[in-house]
Image (cartoon, rainbow, N blue to C red):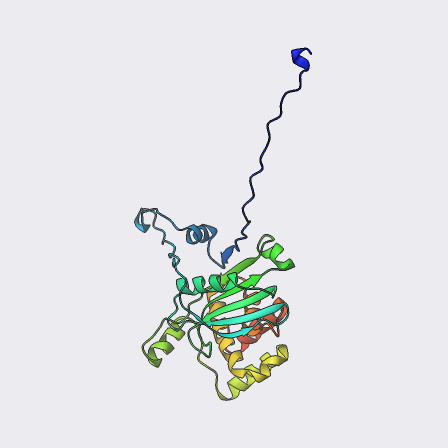
Length: 255
């Protein structure tokens, strides 16, 4: 047989086993530039400091998961809500706790996770919104996503006087009393009847939302829906918009 017609031997190919694919849930910090998110996510070894650029350096993320206690958890149906108690939480540690909790979510397609400093959830340090449904494609590029907002409105004070002063500085109005409280709760119940059984929650949610309105945070209607709703009674952004309108007429009127 002529050499050029001889079949060439084919090498035996071995296909390496593919490692198990691990899906990482992206973390998005609302209202923070993307460059800061990247720095938080991967860390930095840059030792140039803020002095050379004039920009404030992003806060470092804890390398270990801080201790937290799940004090409320409702995972019935497709939506869920949980509160994590961390009495001395700072935003960095609160974000780490939310990320750790989100990694364990199994079942609901949408979960709201808050880090609070007390059992009554009067101060929410951070709140994360985890999604794994059709909305994720629009909000987070089609993958399960975790959006976190950390207003950290009230520094840890030594007494009630410090707390009241810090709340005022952060734009949180005082708790309404008497006729003002009644008028506010009546207006909220028209939008969210379920809050008739939870007046304190309605007041606390409204006061914290006032701080967000004063800062001009992004996604205010969505944020109001998250604060006033829960897994059993999820709210729409349209309802959030109506709640913001109520707040601007009652707890935190526009100047």
